[in-house]
Length: 114
Ligand SMILES: [Zn+2]
Image (tube, rainbow, N blue to C red; front, side):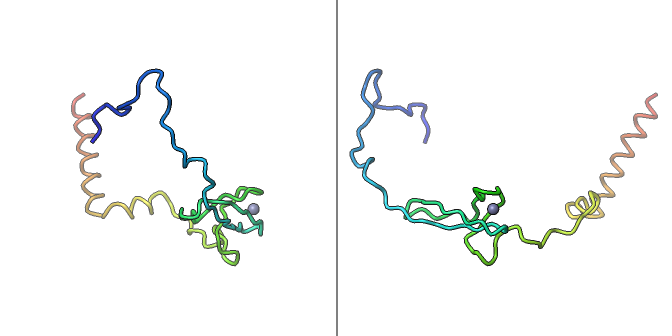
C-alpha cells in the first residue's frame, strides 16, 4: 500500500544500498527473429525472461517474429472497412436509432429556441 514514504530508510548523503550480487553475470540466451524481408535479428535476453513475440527488425524496422517460416505482417490484411462499418460493429441498430432520435430532438430544440 503506497503511503508516500517510498524512500523509507534513505537519508540525505547515505550511500545507495549495496547489492553485491548485482554485478554477477546474468545467464542469457540468444533469440532470433525474422522479418518478412528475410532479415534475421538476434537479441540476447535474460534466460528466465520470456522473449517478446515480436521484435522490430534492426535492418528494415518491420516487425519480426521467431518463426522464420511465418514472419508477422505477411498478407492477411484486414479487408477495407468504411467508417460506417466500424460504427455498426460497435452499435446495434436500436442504439443507432436512439442516438439519432436524441440528436434530432436536440436539433429541433435548438431550432425551436430561436
Ligand atoms: Zn527486416
